[in-house]
Image 1 (cartoon, rainbow, N blue to C red):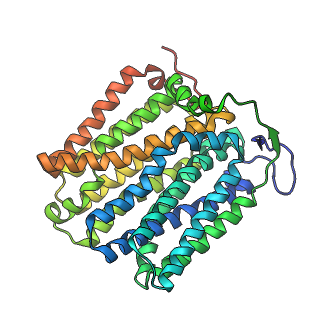
Image 2: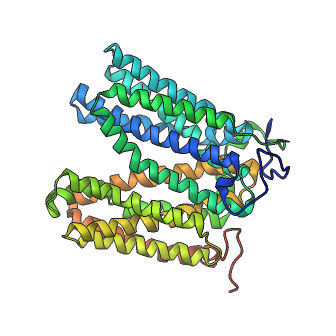
Image 3: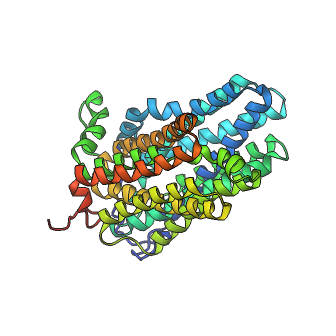
Length: 423
């Protein structure tokens, strides 16, 4: 099979000489806009599908099944997704996923126009979208290093992270506003945006190179897990993020804090949900212009300390402005981990392995977010929301300290290419 040359050293009108900005590379610009449109559309569809399911059934269990239908494909398809991203053309995988998602949005549009949308159809649509996202995410992440020179990867990761955060802010808001005019508006907008995303992905142009020989298919499925296990820096970074977010994920408790502790209305809850994404967006934009050049390990653990302390501050706050500031810091510090982790995966993983390693990374990230909310909710049920959130922040600090001992190579990490400080 074939893939594309990450060097892109031939100077032509489509690929200008390397510059200090990732957005000056046409292939990356198309990729960035396409990914923004795709992520925003997914957020819009999640809002519309969830709201419509509850409108049709008035059943919380059915609403939970929607989330499960989107989450399960990521878990069940992880090994297959990574293998496919390394064996086939990643650009085509992303393109096909975006087109299929657009078709699903169009089918939901048709169903609403003909008044034929039912519970089973919505669950099937959610499952197909979840499967497409399971393939699209790792393939898209593995594609990124092929679009810019190595020196610009961290900035490219920061730009991509900022796109994801902007999508988390704009997508749900836009989906909610459009749904006020009816579900047709959301599904039509999402279908058109996904079509545009697919076209932009299709227009990405790179030089072809010959793919290295692959091991037997069954054995190849597990090579990503083996690679992560053997690379202690990547293993430490990914597992650190998993357990830190797992313990410090207080977002599931925001409705309780808004109503019972801060005594604010839905508008306050909206601000609280937006604050972490705003903090993350600002920090990722900072990384895009001022990339991290040294002390990557200390910066990672320092950011986790801020994350844990900010979570504890949020738990103890009884004033909305203080809570919003704490959540802003939570989002900003979390994105430091995201940029460092993603950059390490891209820079320390051979191109022929990036799909499988990114699939493992995506599984860890998705698991931490989903299980983190579950853990926070369960703990709050036993000890109350304030103590649950405070324990979560304290747990993040404990995990950071433990990982500094367990992964000394990560603690001493100087640059994202893997060099360590002496000692």
